[in-house]
Image (cartoon, rainbow, N blue to C red; front, top):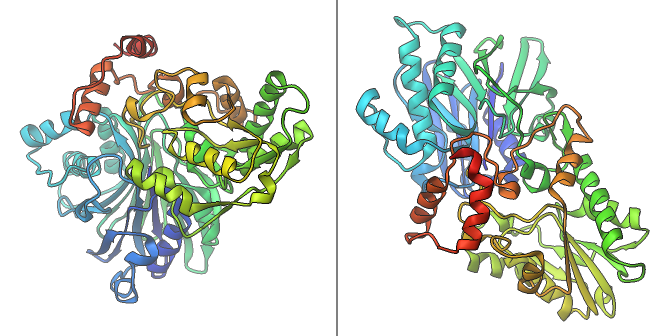
Length: 505
């Protein structure tokens, strides 16, 4: 998961892109980069760190031009090296910079094709560099002579869709020509477009979330359709075309659970409204499983679970309290690499208000339980603060399967719910009781807000991989590379995984 933005304006865009990246910082805290275009020249600055730390005044002054792209990175493929910060650049054809949100699932095959057929060199382990080189090769194949037109660009993206598998939302600049943006045919990762009317004509912003458009003062136009390509030339004229043969809408359910900001609208569904619905459905389940009087107070784990917790408390007529105060200068622990760092960061990030816990049966509501590290620490903090009983509720279903589309859940052994019953997970996080959202209730929470959304990428919950190219062998290889060890051999759990993956073998 990363945050991307592209701008075509009638005035310098460096400050616009910087401000957009600040609004998208929640999508990646590992690295940030901006590339701008003035005439036929690119200017670029990128480095590891938060947006506010990467860009100084001298860097901003060097980013000249009325068009540009930017990215905040959360690494899921490759490493955290500064060389893999985005945007990436190739000098032929025309000169292209690219920023990518997502994860390619056939990257190894593409690397072989790059070497043997396309005669292109890949210099990092980043799948985004591979994607850029596929784009550059297909652009070279689609164009004749020295000119470039929208028809050639759409032909380029159509050819790319046929070669590339996985999830990808992309913004790319072609030197002297304009901005190209496109989304994978399954619509897994979000991408939207906004506009601004000026005396010189329209200006456009393409970004991962609508909050970036609104924060810049642009008006939301629409979401980019799965498989669609959009080209905005340097004069601000917009062209678009569907470039995939059989596109389908399958937005990532985890975007609504945790990744996106609540004030964003993704594929026509308010993230805030979907989280309220998650609270409603979770309240229904708690009402079925607990008797009156077993819960004294409802508390959210700030921040992303707050809408669900408020709605749950309202529906159950329970007292709602803020029992944890968040240190906003600590990053999102889910995005942090390594269990030890996450465990330490929980205590630095949250502080309990003891008076709210003492002698009470407390229902803690979190957006999800992934590795269990944060949940275990939070339960202990509640007990240390005097809670009589701690019930833990997750607004999302159990995370049981790896995510291969751009979220850092790639190995089964890292997932606390993998191979464990709800009762076993409850014991692992040391809670007195545990309640998970049902998978169908999660999907209804989103489709209730936008009935046009009927299918979702929810593989981390249900093991169904929408791209159809993920097999058991693929997951085993992924885990072997990540852990530098053989995949585990639990027959019972493997049977469960086999059942969910049977349709892709």
